[in-house]
Image 1 (cartoon, rainbow, N blue to C red):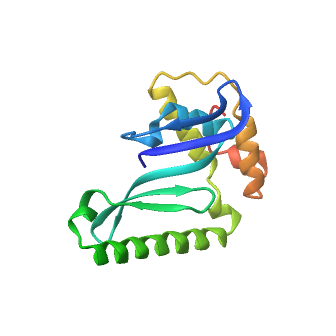
Image 2: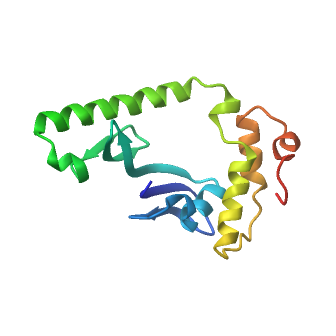
Image 3: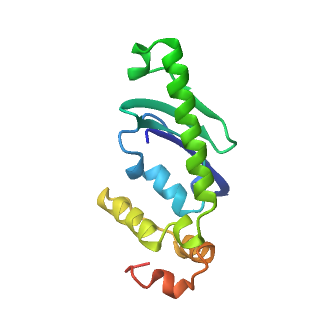
Length: 157
């Protein structure tokens, strides 16, 4: 993942956050802090390996998928690009459909996911000065789990 845009209710960090051309989006403080405050992805971008080719795609919350003609796609003929891009979009839609039908316990992240975010921020000397209880409670509820049970396996919540 190389770029993302988040938005949500206005808080001490603002109403939205955007990171572009990141080397490691999963360690980006603006993204991690936004997710920990309850913001949601509006779009994500990244390079995805598909059938041995790297395809760069932008995926919007509103269902728009844009396959970019970059990297290895540049060297392919137009029909090959169209077929590969179309197949990659179909795979993305199929994966999303499969996710929507999963049970809550495997559809939403476990508490360790958020605990790992806090650790990545700490490793970068970013101090979290707000309570993360709300995000843990929200996802415990989404997973149909008791808050205490949900957070039992992690420390320092």
